Image 1 (tube, rainbow, N blue to C red):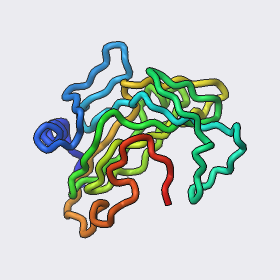
Image 2 (cartoon, one colour):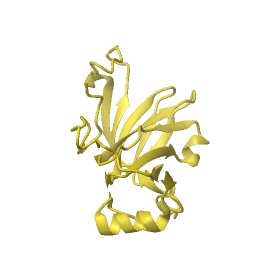
Image 3 (cartoon, one colour):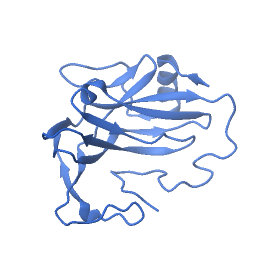
Image 4 (cartoon, rainbow, N blue to C red):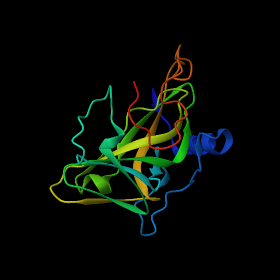
Length: 184
């Protein structure tokens, strides 16, 4: 398995639509960086958020997740309450090639503030906007910013093409458009 470099990411985004919209160099101008890096792509956070709340005393159950557990927000930033989390999505739409597995890592700027980003791997031939989870592990409110970097995606090229891709098995999160809650 190989980690794919900036030249490959740029080619796949520009010639094959792997990432749209694509920012071909890393941007920082007073923002948390985003765009292509040496061996990854730093995706931006879209300005739509689902903020976790316990106001309705719902039980967190991945088999029967209640939308009442969230309050929807839009805007250039989102404040996460202490020891809570928010769901967001990427600005970028991803189309993963059949011989690629994509791993997501949090941005160090957020990690150094106690804000952890969690995303499961993007499987071969999955496509859509990526739902992101930002956990505030601190006892204080924490802010995240829309249209700035939120996480980095690393592209791993397999030595062999998989027999069955995410598209082949019609995965339940295929083509997701907005912030997507758990599905069974």
